[in-house]
Image (cartoon, rainbow, N blue to C red; front, top):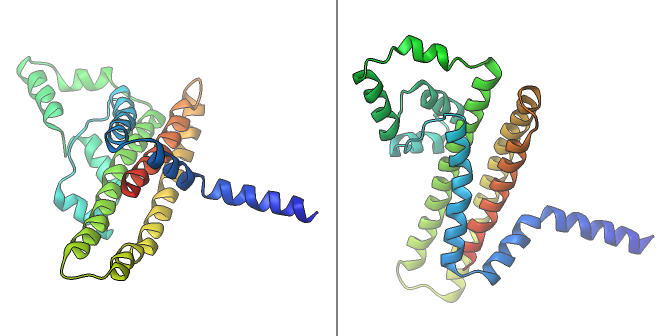
Length: 224
């Protein structure tokens, strides 16, 4: 009975820490160039989903990122603006100008591309995932840069250098938990909608797997 309890407890800890275990494995078996390449491939998966569902791409501005970081702006609000064309990318703007110059009817185009309420929500959820990715990568890099800046400033003992890193752990863990919860909420709703409107929920499953891999790869890069 004791052995059984230990096995169950060990399995629970492994499952709980699986993302960190995977990150450690990546860090030990890949060089930095390989990790960066895998991160680019990982990001492309979300980009492909955006293309498939006609979600425009654009670079989130520093002002928007700052508001997303401090909570004055919500990821879903940015996603809605993105879909409404209030923050189009250069490519999207170019397509809009081309359509206008060729005399394409906006109303006719809208009629052809009329989406159901479920399909519109799927678009919004994919856009939200894009915004969340940009937001939390920005938050993460800001925390890491603050550690680098402090680490490089002045005369520091080996003990203080270690403290500089470990002092960020609580902040990073809280950030990861917050992001996990938001992504889980998006994936759960996306799965419901896909099961209603499509043949399967592959996109939701892929989205969840892509997110977990992105976390492991990012951690591996910082481990190195």
